[in-house]
Length: 113
Length: 110
Image (cartoon, rainbow over all chains, first blue to last red):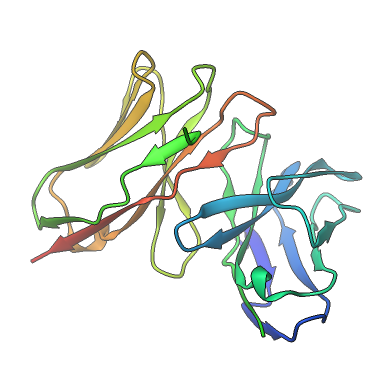
């Protein structure tokens, strides 16, 4: 009963490095999304996808790329890490955008030095 | 005005107490409403959806007041294990993306 699986759990990057945060779900959900959570800011939407081959920007997309080649996977790429991207990242999926509750992965704690 | 607003707390209550949180939303066209629970350094987990007529799940009761544009969460007979941050989540009705409040922290003490 995996649900939403995120890897890695922790990551430290140097400024300018790139990396990919992995997210997979086994619930056959069409909607997938990435959030970042910072103290006092709540969860902010980075990118989202309503189905394979379709992605769109959320509230804070700059510095991040996504792709959705399959229903199951929705990786988040940091192109050139900056200290401002130090945050906790959550992947989430739902059956339907906006009306169904989101199921979250365990999160990735990222530090950029 | 923020789309979704919550009192950050903390609400410190003794075990067994009843506590209630409100969450206001700005868009009168908002559709879906949820309460999530988030433990420290963990992912948010769905506590309950909020229906127009109000709904109850054990010790938890959620209500929606469309006229005043807020939802509420009532916790009866608080347990130590209820200590967490409670996130209000709203579909603002535009572009159908869920919007999260910053959360209300609850601390239940002996």
